[in-house]
Amino acid sequence: MVKKSWKAIGNVVDGAIHIRNEKPCQDALYLHTGKDFAIACVADGHGSSSCPHSDEGAQTAVKLVGKLLYEMLPNLADHKDIRLPKLIEAKWKEEIKKLHADREREEFDPFPYIQYGTTLLAVAAAKDFIFALQIGDGNILMIDKGGNARPILAVEESVGEDTESLCLTDAWMYVRTQIIPWNADNGETMFLLSTDGYAKSFADSSGFLKAGTDFYKLWQEEGLDFIKENLPDWLRKSSDKGSGDDIAMALITF
Amino acid sequence: MSERNLPGGEMSSRILDFFWIADCSGSMNGEKIQTLNYAIRQTIPDMRKEADDNPNASIMVRAIKFSDGAAWHIPTATDIENFNWVDLTAGGVTAMGMALELVAGELKQFPTDTKRLPPVLVLLTDGQPTDDFKKGLEELLATPWGKKAVRIAIAIGKDVDLDVLEQFAGNKELVLEAKNPQLLVKFIKWASTVVKNVSAPSVGDTAGGSAIDVNTIPTASADDDDIW
Image 1 (cartoon, chains in turn cyan, green):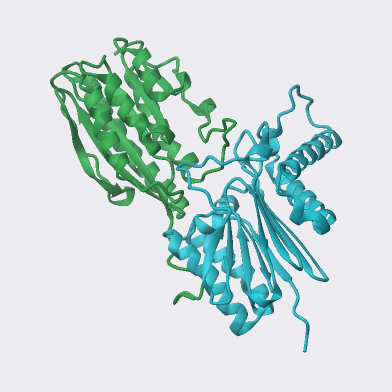
Image 2: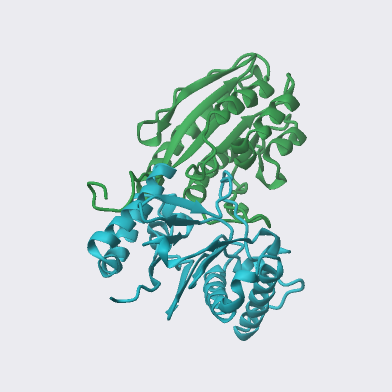
């Protein structure tokens, strides 16, 4: 019998609006799988005129947090306090400052982290726990062996386009985390992480939850490779028919 | 999977609600109301083009008029493709507060989900409120969407209470002083172009980003008339 393990796939597509306006994709994706673990991060740079380098902010965030979660994986389940969010904020800001200097961009005081503003969502799945983390908008779904999709780390949606961000002062205060005990006996489970452009492409929230269930069924019936092959096309069409925004999505399965 | 072979339920573009809020008091009579009617009608082709260029947002337009009271001029949210401007006539006083209460009542009905784009409210007036403006503004800003709305005020002529309009817009830069007919036409056209920024949103953030580029606000030309 083949031992089951965590797997992760994902994709990023340019939003229909960004293509029309010739703006770079602001979303980013990071995946890392290994023996008994999978890590996925997605991020959405704000892209407004006050955030001209937010695509780089998003790329920096997913790589940094992906690597950080990997390094801390053995002890991640113990991080129930504020140390990890504080560490993420400090390291992201440190890397952004370095990146800014490396690019020889204009010097500022105080440093305008808003120029690199981004959201961040991450899931680290290990042998006996799931660790989820989020700052800003976007969605994480857990889909159980019955195909039932439920949101993780969801907060009441705010109207308008505002979001919390790694660029804020004391950004750590806005970081939400959750640890879910895990056992292989839980059965085949899927996690879906997506930037807000995906959920906003549906007419209502039930349509987005149905996407979680549909991805689960596709995995069960067609396999993960089938999803991997079709995901770019599905995300592209979802953006075209819906929000027009960039979309980054990751799926973690067991 | 749906019949369209995409995971998930029905997909749809996002909705952008646009409100014209027009002063029809007696002092607007004559060239001011004629110019307002002309300019709003002129915006329709541009707004339709924006809607065509951005199929990811549906622009829905309504209009409110105020004078002795406030009433819906175009009460049904109308897709810009089917929108036609019906000329306003002037007469009466300036019940601006009641107009804002009417907008607030409509925005209260909006679902508070992130699917909807922030509404755009454009207030056009040549005078000073003759009713309880503060109450109307408080009601408007008490609604989640009223607070998030892009609020632009166009002051027509020199007798306008700019302080009131600044309170409405929440930003001095979004109070536009149309000192002559040419500027009024330019400002109304500019206000309609805001849909381009709002319908293709980039997230600002709680640190204060904005979708509106105030650098694009028109300025007076040398050959504009001096006054109304």
